[in-house]
Length: 85
Image 1 (cartoon, rainbow, N blue to C red):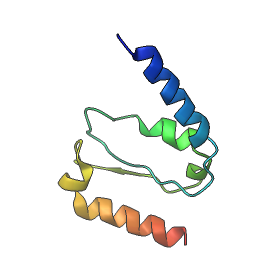
Image 2 (tube, rainbow, N blue to C red; image 1 turned 30 degrees about the horizontal axis):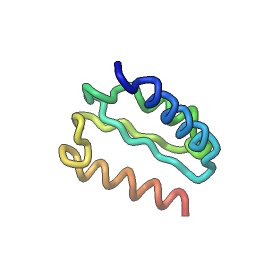
Image 3 (cartoon, rainbow, N blue to C red; image 1 turned 180 degrees about the horizontal axis):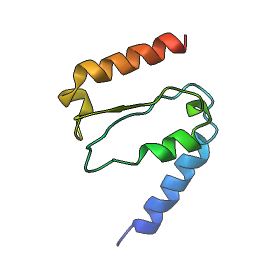
Image 4 (spheres, rainbow, N blue to C red; image 1 turned 90 degrees about the vertical axis):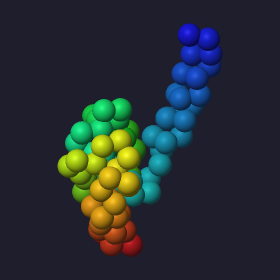
């Protein structure tokens, strides 16, 4: 693929910065997202600020979680903010 090596280098550079991010991090994924399902593991393990957080998996959210399950998504964010003042 043209440009694939360049994009990989950019991705690696981004992770090099993000792996040092100490602020609290929440992951909120849908259980049925056909695109990102399972992708939360990389964020939960590579972001130092993700350790010890109450990450959420929201049922029936699809790929557009904020549109398909806005109440559950919003509540996850509210709970996260309250837990990390």
